[in-house]
Length: 306
Image (cartoon, rainbow, N blue to C red):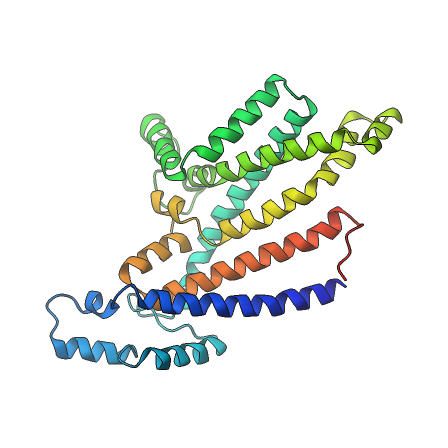
């Protein structure tokens, strides 16, 4: 059954990816002619025409689309107009930085969100509950760019901790990861509190308590496991979002990931790179949601995919 699920999802993913790339192909062409930016203001009409022919942009749009589809089937997304190297290679080089940032942000979100949510559910209407819900409200309403700038003003500029930008060390990673993980942590805190409160009043939980099981075992084994399903759905979407590149966070902290590359490529009208970023982002979403589906059956053995 699991193999059949994988095959069906991979087939559907292929259709989705093809549709997304088709939409992006036509939308990017509506943004303007990249050759005018590439050639500069002092280029002659002959130079502009030569560049346009060199990149195949002098052909009719249906012909360009046909070449694009044929190249995608071969695994070739074209060469960057700006960097003059394969677009997919350029994106994959930046993907490592995005994965590091996404992994750190996901760890912060899961640990912080689940901890606050469980404590709030175990002690409803207590100080922990109020702190947790205040954190959830603030975390989901504060814009990420504002939070990133605030953290830069406080820690690197005032206290001399960490770095304002760059990549390569833990000091560079902390602030972007906190900025990126706060929203997900706030949402997980709110959802885990609601799910745990619903589960902890069920009959099987009261039976487990009546048997004399330790409180931590009742909460984790009987409570958390049965409250995981909605959280797994949210985690699947969040991980896909993180892996597809946090555009705002990477831009604020000059983090060299695919989010920052996407912004630069959009402004430069670098069609091949934008298409490659969208492809990698779409694959990340598909894989994250597929992993969430598989995790459903592991969290709840009653779930079977036919």
